[in-house]
Image 1: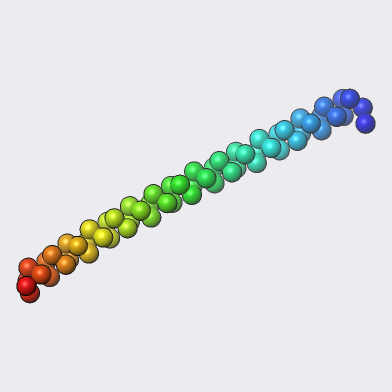
Image 2: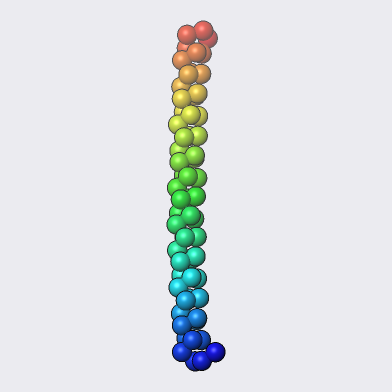
Length: 61
């Protein structure tokens, strides 16, 4: 294998690694967003249940 072929192979490997890292970064960001969305929905659901409980206690308590 000539030096030029080795350089081309190394450059291709580096490009593959950059593409892999970019994809992993994108997936990581998506997972973080999904986590925050789940937390937000949980907080809203908890507040709704607390409010419903307060109304129930006011009506029947």
